[in-house]
Image (cartoon, rainbow, N blue to C red; front, side, top):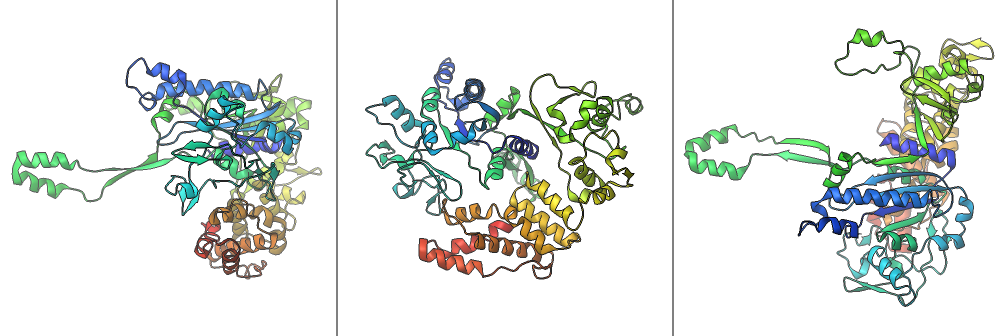
Length: 566
């Protein structure tokens, strides 16, 4: 899934941030499902995951056509989705949609035309009212129902009920607060009246068309985008199974075999249980995979571009093949990377591209192992991630970000007519490694896809294992990148989704987190010549929030810093 995540980030680099985040959940009561189940009386959707999978796939394809071909929200430039299966629930899909006219779409008045967080008037639109009531109401929860599944430590983990809003606006963190007017329109669920504060944002026409839960949200140009991609491409659930002796069967054997047999079995019992740890696939996901349906999809496609040092390419072969025959194949040494250099030598037009941009104008033929000019379609390329500690191949990747059209490894290492012996020395000649440029380049490249916790780990790795000339300056250039999850994690810990942290406190929390991480390697901020936090933040926030928001101090102290370093 990490590759899918990086593919999504590659689309984001090409087209900017996505405009819409759509969640579409299967409805087990769709007429198509009920009609198929009626052939055998008494069947329920959970009894026939094959029917559910087929119908959901048909509905998903129709929705994707609405979003792209029929341009429901406008002309789209890119789309990615990921199917998710719950252990005891119906499948759903998370869709990210990029629009070509995204700036006009984000105007609050235009948002109101596409997204609603209100109940329709039953007298004016009875069909819409019933659709929203049936599919788009959250809860009841909160004070109305403290035992709801979404309740955690007395709060709804989805932050319902929301506050009333006279008009749609964007808060300081970049989140859209949708219009939720305080009207007299309510609906009853579980015997409790719910108003607009419990409505999940949606597009009314889509909900009516598909008669299902379709949550539609505007994506913000904010720090949370990486975490949205991370959520959409997260790993599957895992489960642990324990294998034990069947005690009831042992009891039956005792009655038949007598005490002698019982004593013998007692002596052979292994008190250490056998555990199996693996992926958990529910029946719906297993059926989905059996049918060969895709779990995730990207449009346009993303080509993953490998790199390797000279003579160190991987060679693939089938089990049982004769190794000598494999080595004697004429194309055994050909890879996408070597043939890119060969294409640069063969075609003058190819030499204008960087390696990462090459798939936009050229197509890789896996069977013939060669590149040819692209005739149609649109594709994005991305070079696979290489860790800084990989050595020469890492410096090769750095050079590929600036060197266009090389025809050989030697040309990649050539700077101003001078052939350098290593890729690292070529990077130095290009001043990519001057002062702390090497570490800055690594952080810049990694920040395009990595989350803030990964960047903090990388920064600490540089501090502990590399020669950083000016640690304080490197921190000043990158502290915002390393702290872009702190506000989100802190707001979750205290249960205040719209909380905004000022820059001074944000910086101080980051420094405390880095100090904790450095202490694991028996070091500290002072030892590495890094800035010091200006105040003991745990006590500061505890006192301030107790006074202003009546948030228990223990919640803040136990979660705020711990969340950043674990």
